[in-house]
Length: 311
Image 1: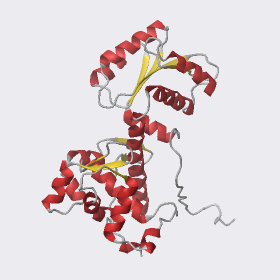
Image 2: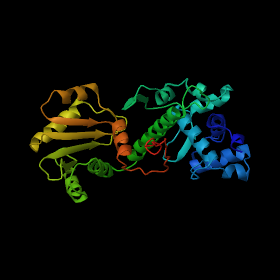
Image 3: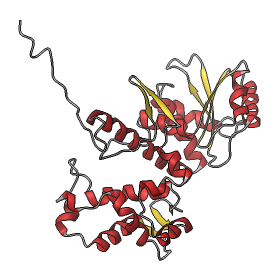
Image 4: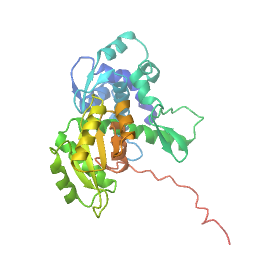
């Protein structure tokens, strides 16, 4: 029965078609409209992934939407809202087959899938944005699983940054403190709450203990920029704020990026200032379970050689 449901690539034109009227539609309506367009039966709509928590139709429509957004054929003006773009209209009008090959004509999609941003693993380098090929027989199931895990986390990271951008600067400052606590810094949430009272104190957004005894403190700066690159002047101002507090260590966090001059500057000063950009922030939040929860767990099992060892 599952093979009667189109793949996420095959659903891409349908997702665009239900948005071609130009209306902004919630994701649920997109799901419902695509299902109606295909005329799925109740049995098809009820089919769920092995976890039992998500239907195949919703999963595939959702991934089709994500890939179309990455290619710029759909935009999301608000969280959970979809709208077709001029690029999407042109794609439909072109008569070309809209799939991953077509989306690869656009740099934003290639950036999403490329291995330009890599992360280290014990087995070498794994692509940050993995491309999952269901017909590639050269890859082992373990390799496909690793790529799928990377792809899911990269999509989750993007969603985290979008969510953060919709929140207030005050919430972002508290999020930064919560992350530092989750990473093992500070003594307690009470300490962190007191630290955030420094939000208007000379460019300092928070102060947290480096260790549970409070032998030294780390000063925090949180900038909820989205498109503005944080430059050297911002980092110099933060370094000056550290001087005011006779502090030696600081963490500057943004959801955008840092310029090369900013990164070079922190390597040439005596103070220890760590710069965390949007990608690094989202990765740390995922790694330390801040703002995310576990949806599914897959246990990968192997032979227990000790059990089968005969004495």
